[in-house]
Amino acid sequence: MPPPSAPTRAPGIWDVIVVGAGPAGATAARVAAEHGCQTLLLERAAIPRYKTCGGGLIGASLSALPPSLPLNIYDTARQFTFSLNGRRERTLASACPTIAMVYRSELDAALTEAAAAAGAEVRDSTALSALEQQGGTVTVKTNRGDTLHARAVVGADGSASRVARYVGVQCTQVDLALEAEVPVDERTAGRWRGRLLMEWGPLPGSFGWVFPKGDVCTAGVVAARGNPAALRAYKDDFLERHGLLGSRPLHDTGHLTRCRRPGSPMALGRVLVAGDAAALVDHWSREGISYALRSGSLAGHAAAHLVTATDEAQARALADHYEQQVDDVLGVEMRASGTLMNLFARNPGLVHTALTRLPPAWRRLDAYIAGRTSVAGIMSTPFARTAAALATRLPPRPTRTRSNEPLRP
Image (cartoon, rainbow, N blue to C red; front, side):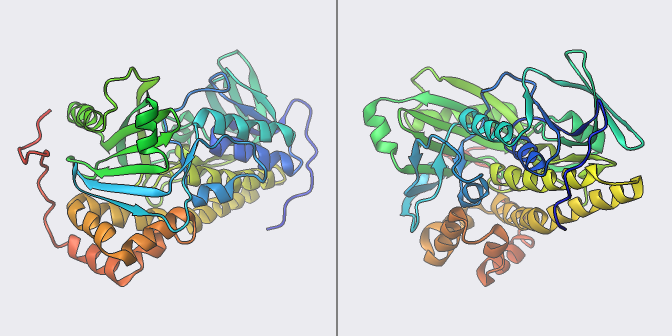
């Protein structure tokens, strides 16, 4: 579908309002503005704002960034250390170092500046308080007492999105991530420089990570929501084992990640959702930045077309087209990652052995990290298909701690 011609804005009505200035929202605002839309980007926090996130940009994320985006990269992963709950550790070299370590506050600020440079107006410290639509107009109310009107709205306001609740987004997997940004001395920084850690943890589907960023390491753990005490115990053990528990962290936070249920709506009338608000997150790795950037771009294009819709039947068709585009590109990825997550949760040892002992498996993962293949590409291999089929016939492995005792809160 070709880009629409620059629309004519009725007095007092924005063409596009985007809620949330993370990667999805800032990208949607930039793309809509580039199409000539009068675009308003709302962010509830003051920019730049801290965001709990590992801050690792894989190849799919890097290729989705706008050209020449000014961004500080604090390290690039050249080696990947994998372990199985602290055991069977193995370090592998990347054929093409790709994961760029950044701070989300700086990434989001740079993307927001790019949206502003494209013509979008940015208002931070402004939160959505109410949303409704009638006919061809969407009304947005804010905590500042503003009543705004638009021809299209994109909700990119995170995993706790108010816009997502309005649209009716449904999730099939909800996880809790606990993370700390820990200052490290030169010796520790040197030990981690150019190397990240992924450890498959003691809780079903859990893992821990360490991402180096010069004199700071971002480290955390993630598992299914429902046993926060056990996850906190795993986090403390994980940080202690890797020498990251002693220093006072710069940030010590937690947040929920949500994965979309297949078939869940991503639009209601002239309101679209993207990124975490649409629950577009990889089931296995919980990586969401690449999903946010790509869905944000699609949402920006779709919003620009919605502005030109002459009636609500055409608006519905355009919204349906957006949902289909997201499903064709990202839904396929999520279904594949859901299959991988099922295999991993049932037998993390099998996944660990495959990655660390079978060179073709590591090469596939390395190619995915570099952006040369997708999760769907990984799961289409004969080994992955056989392993996934076998996993569905095996009972899940019992949860154990490193000492092989039952894990208790």
